[in-house]
Length: 241
Image (cartoon, rainbow, N blue to C red; front, side):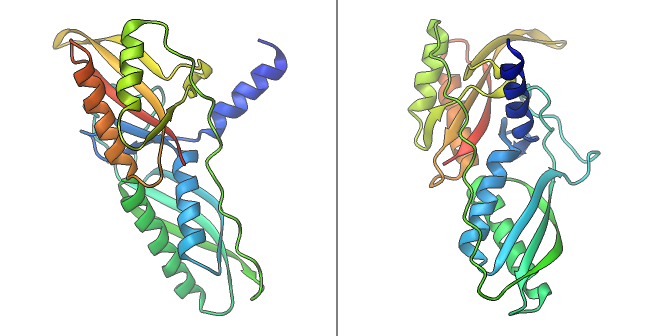
């Protein structure tokens, strides 16, 4: 790998942000912080005029208040638990800042729960600037487009890909995590209390018109049922378009 390609790979992996738990411990799904943040920004642009978001981060509200997921998590993924959104914002002087902050908080909370399915319990906001009354709203930002995945070359990988793509709300498969270019990862997972069992991880982009966690649940069920040994399945959402 050349120096330029290495630097590009590092930027891509860092740009994903944290791998956030999607839904609860039984949902077996995660979403990149970049993908979730883009959805929240679009919700603010649509639902909170006169407010402009700055830095936006999503993390565990309390790293001690977490639950073990029912399936193996993607590498470096956060465990399921309540989440906190922190954001800087600017607003016009047309209304008191607390009022603008309340509108912003409602937009963020609504999108996190209704569009994505994130378990957000805390939203911390900091006003950093005042906007001119006629300042244009910031354009909504899309999720950075993750690279498309390579076609699976094995029979089971192809079966998994076809099952996932057949689920309503799945737009395409992506190959992001680890820079391997593969959307379907199949491995043996050893458990101290049971015989080794196969585990499948699928990376994908979902349609913004579908609730993200609901799509992930359907993908898990479809992939599990598509393989004869009914493996455990985890889903990683890398973009919402």
